[in-house]
Length: 436
Image 1 (cartoon, helix red, strand yellow):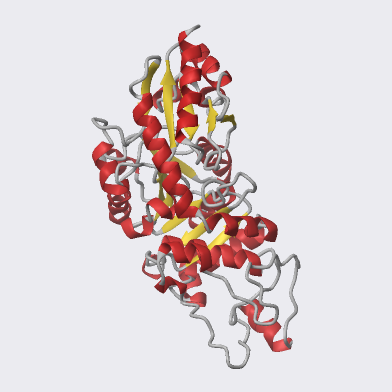
Image 2: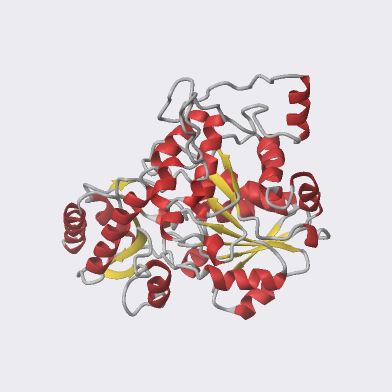
C-alpha cells in the first residue's frame, strides 16, 4: 500500500465495514498516491521486482505476501479477488480464467485419486460433464442426488471416501432452487465441506456462506462480469471448515494451516497449487472488466430479477405455454422457499416449455428478435437457447427426461432491457408457435 501525501488523511481500507453497494464499487482498491488513479490500473507485467534478496526469499517462502509472478497473483486481479470475497463474506478469493477452471480447481484441492464427492443432480450441464468426463479419468468419482430434500438419498450417496458436497443456489435451466442451509447440514453430518456454485444467485441475492457453505465458486463470466465481454471464475474461501481437525481426510490442507494459518489455508493452497501449477490464470485485462461489472452488480440484479419475475408470471398465463420453471410462481413446489430466500424473485434464468415439442421450440426461438440466441447467461442482454440440442445434447434422452429437459423447453436469461419490449418479443414468438 502506498504512503499518502503529507497532510492527507489516509482512507479507511477496511471495506468490510461498509454496505454491500459501497463494497461492490470500492472493496480491494488501493488508490495510487503517486498518480491519483481513480480506476484500478491494468498491470500487464508478467513479473515484478523485489526490494532485496531477503524480500525475494520471504515471498517465495510465503512469509511475506506480494507478487511473485502473474501466474499466481497480479495487482489488478487481486483487487477483483478481494472485491468478490468481500461481497460473499469470505476470508479470501482466488480468480481463474473461467468458471469451469474455478470449479475443477476446487474439487482437485479437496480430492485425490480414489476419493469421491456428492453433488445435486440439477446443476450446470458443463459442470456435470467435467465431473464425469475428466475427474473420473483421474480416479475421482461423483454421485448425484436427484432430490436434495431427500435425506435418505443423501445418506445412501455418502461414503467413507467422500470429501465434499457440491450444489448450486439457483440451477439452470430449471430454476429449481436449493436450500443451502439444509444441504449444509447434510455436509456437516458427513464431516465434509460444502461447495456452493453461486453463479446465478450472486451475492446480490444470496450469500451461501451465511447459510452454512464453506466454499463458494462463481463463473464470474456471467452475472458478476455481467456484460458478456470476458471469461473469468472465482473461488471464495469461507474459512469455516476445520482442516486441522480433519487432517486424516485432508492432510494437504492441514499442512496448509500450519503454513498459512486457519483463515487463509484453503485460499493459499488453491493459489499456490491449483492456480500456480495448472496455470489457468485470469488475465489483468479480464480482471479489469470483472471489476467494472461488479460495480453495478446490485443495480443490474434488481432489474434482471424484476424483469424475470414479471415475464415468468405472464408466460404462465399464455396460450401455447405448457409450463414455466420459475421458483417464484405461486403454487409451485419451490414457492415458499423462493419467498424465504429471495423475496419471491429467484434470479433471472428460468425455462419455458412451449407447445409442439422440438418444432415448437424451433419456431419460438427463430421468431425472437430482442432475445439473442446464445449459450451464455447473466448478460445485460436477454438470451434464449434450446438446452436439448445444445447444452444437454450429449446427454441420453433418458437422462434429459430425468432432469426435466423436454423437447419443447427453452431456457431464458432475462436481461435489463425494457420489460414491455421483452414481453412483446416473447408474445410474437408464441404467436408464431400458435400459427404453425
